[in-house]
Length: 480
Ligand code: SF4
Ligand code: SF4
Image 1: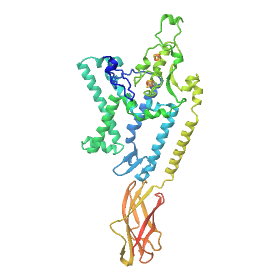
Image 2: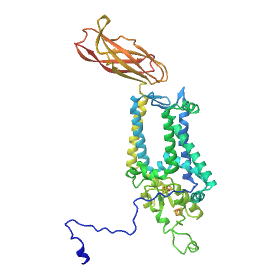
Image 3: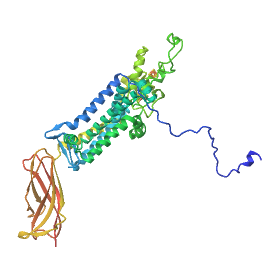
């Protein structure tokens, strides 16, 4: 029987022949550990400057005092947020929303101008990875020493070095977790509770959670967070254009690459400036080769620029074979000045305009903001009733929130119906940055208004002027 006859007759459906490879190919590549080589240079110094600046702010801010309290505190339990002189309540959520919108716009603007430089210099993942790698290098040695240590079998030296490294990493992680929790729970009290081993279970949970997240992300996950977990890496390409600054390899100048030879030195062969030393690959924290063009894994840290500049200096060639450039700039061989001139393009101007308008709006609204909030709730337990003296009475609960740093005395008045007046104590004292619930009785002479619901106003005003005043609406019920 011929081969063709042994097969089933072709059906009306199209059968696509599948070639079966002899070797099966895995869908997932095993993770290769990256051993970045340390490098010095302009951009490495900038990275460290940013590490110091961001960590100074993060670790230092919760210890700052403002008057008698922590300067920056998000007191979730008491539902108050302190930002230096500002006291915000959940009712001020609009400011938080504004802040988030401003942050998002800033990121858009920054990405349009300078690509992933945020990732390379200031993102917490990058910053903590940098710190953890520094610790690793101090304990385990240079790139080659670390690779050797990982290759060799178990030894006392290896055990001690690894153990010491992890202890320091965990220490940094836990300190980071403690600081993070210190933004939500007064950090000095938290420190005392820790020393007296009486920290609350939620606080312990968050310190451990955040601490081990730092340890895991900066110690083990590292570049994988940037490659596979960070959503920003995925959508940023939509914000890039041909005038966005990215780290680029100058192919026209570098190729054909090759190891320099004596013949080359004599000018016998036309070779590019890249000597294929791979130093730019070895220093890359995400382990990519920038000479292969723009890759989404590139975090724009500029370390390959530093590495290549060192090589170019040694080869007595001009710096900048790998450099920050734009696609247009690279294609048109533009000067740095020409590249920078393109920064002010329409997309950047629009982002900047919207950003400035939003910032101005937020600022004005904060300046003219009344440092008093009032919530009115009808007392559901008591409907309208006849009080002493033939007065019709409605009872309310008022939450008065003092957003100043001084004790305030507030006077409560009612308006909206002839003869309406406050029958309970009209003056309420509220401590600085505190809120207080008070029961307020409104009375109206019987028969002064027809039956039904009537709109009335609570006018709450601070005595002395600086505490501000607000007017809140409520319904006054007149039964049949
Ligand atoms: S560091 Fe510069 S010269 Fe060396 S391989 Fe990279 S691009 Fe080429
Ligand atoms: S390619 Fe260069 S700029 Fe990009 S991540 Fe690697 S070292 Fe940083």
